[in-house]
Length: 271
Length: 290
Image 1 (cartoon, rainbow over the protein chains, first blue to last red):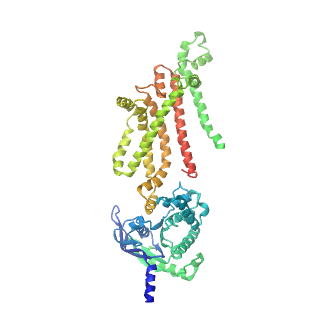
Image 2 (cartoon, each protein chain N blue to C red):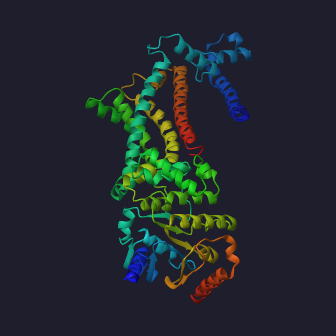
Image 3 (cartoon, chains in turn purple, blue):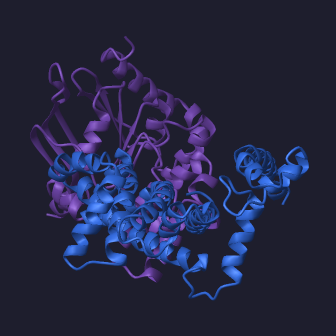
């Protein structure tokens, strides 16, 4: 009896935030249709940090966009928090971080972060308080009055993460957010994201093509392959919950990274 | 500070060169008539001919100093409400230009909003907008004046209509481009916020388009002043710099014509200055970049 209760409790905490089954996405290109995703199954439980990794054209961004209702499904089912992606988007159930910061240059940092809240009609004082909270979380407390072009690329991307937190989403979707940044900045941002995830207990889906980044951040790594885009393997990472950059040289970390690399090779990603 | 001192230098240099050329041209254009009117004894005295050519009552080309003393006389020796006072005439033209400009701006922006938000309007209106500007304004202005006059619109309204007709075009073209300039990522971002069409317009399209509004406005201002003067030329030519221009040409009063031209360009400069002021204000509000 006690065991059953425990199982139920586990089931509650492991409630699927994202459930995709037999997901297909086909784009109609000029000459012939392009299969961006073929029969993709994906289950993301609450509190998971899932990375989607694979070569260019494997559909990892498309999958993320489908979850965010930015790309239409061709067939299959996809639910976000038990709702269709469209319903989830209308309920502002997720925060989305794009490949580029996509900040509005005519707004200062604070007003960029309050932008989503302005659309909800929230009172100004409340908006600003929440923006301050999110900026502090990303270490940007002193930059609220700066304009985007006065910040480095890494800081701009941090602002865009703070902005994605505006609706206090329990799901954060990130599409290669650090792809355009140098490695040192990327390391520091990885720490920021890791801290954020640990402190908020959010669920995160993170698209990347960096193996160390995926291993460092994730609880699970979804390895994908291209043409057609499909899921090759899902690798569980049992690294400790609190992670440091030094861990990347430890045998456990290297082993997971190796496993990911092997899976990518199986998918002919290096051809 | 240094920039402010150095920047006018090329401008002043060119202006000096133009003034010198002007005086030389005034000599050659006016000398034949001046010689006819002169005492025959002085005809071989070059300096006397030059002085006569530069100080005729009805010169072919008045000299800058004549134009300005004529303007000075008109502005300071006549009361402000006298039709001989150029400032009054400029005020009429300014009223026409500004009224027409405001109407053209509202119309131009409204058209751009329609074109950006409706494919039907985009397909159906844009060709007409472009075609409207291929009609020479000089041909259409008298017709507009007559047609509107017949249905009871006289005075400011028909003239402002002509100005609006000319000035809406650069605004529409610029703002269509501006409203369409948010990139795909910015549009996706607004979609993730479940933003309404109005949200997207006011929070994204409108602020982005501001960078396109001011250049369009500068073109529109130049067209508005031209348009106001053209509108003052036809039958109803009674007030405004255009009317002075026309009267000057009837009576061979070249100085009057030049005075009207000088004030017309000052009016355009003033209006452009206002646009730049607005642009500078918005740029400052945006932290230094528009």
